[in-house]
Image 1 (tube, rainbow, N blue to C red):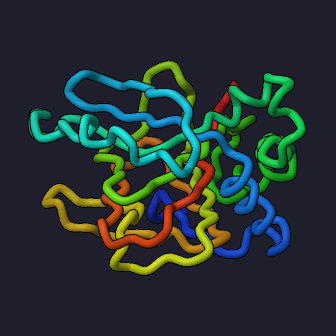
Image 2: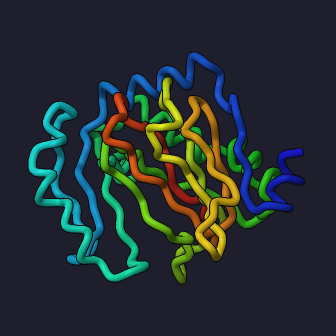
Image 3: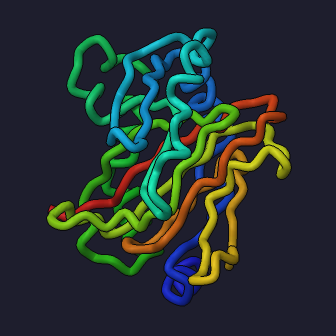
Length: 223
């Protein structure tokens, strides 16, 4: 069933991939153990702005909102992030639970599952990062296709326990007229898979949102 859906649409939304205690443990690690780094792309290009605690993430944000000067259709984004794959090589992070999740993403059972759903036999491993979206954050339209990267599919694991539709941050798939064919909510313990290239975006988090959107994302890659 999942393989048929992916073959037809180039994407799949899969619920309950992890056992509930494991999913909750990943969420707790994201909420309590993760150092977040502001990252954005605007008219000055892509920038990482250093690590900060969750409590002071909003400091200095007015200076980062100069996105209205972007030319139409320019790629841009704004959110907080933690590069799990980079941290995995550092002894200071090796004991953290997110590193166990990274090992799971690169295990043969998960790679075999991804190959079975996508039908892409070249998938061999995954990279990983943890984006954290708060009010005002977003990711503009793009398709993940970068020459030489061997990105065969993108994945998004969602770990937000409670989310309301009016808060935004949907993974959305617009057509040539800007209408959304489909949009995936960040439901807890769901996995989104999409073929590269697939045009998609993450809609902006509404100012009324009372929570942040936690996820672990990346690409399924070939050697």
